[in-house]
Image 1: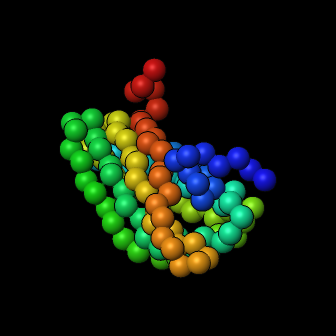
Image 2: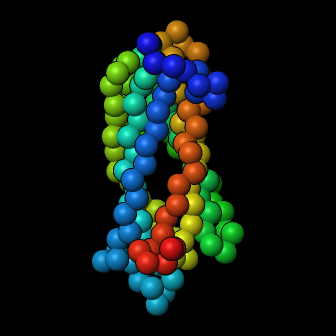
Length: 130
């Protein structure tokens, strides 16, 4: 059985992968477009349904926007033990660098709800950060 961390008792593992989209960006207009792929894996012993999301997106000027909504990409996936759900979405920043973090509101099999924290990750135009 997987070891559960104190801050992740339900065993939801979240991995992120970021891409900069130069063809959709316009640096002259301070428009920097990024896609991110999220993989949510259920390392726990019970199914969990993703109900909603809460993102905190911060650019290099410390401007923060919060995004809340039902599900992800129009879905509220049920993730069974040892299974993963992967999706790709995107965001636009006014600076070349920023961060995203947040949480997914999940519902366990017994109806109880819990938050799965999304660790902060960096959005960066290539070759801007060393």
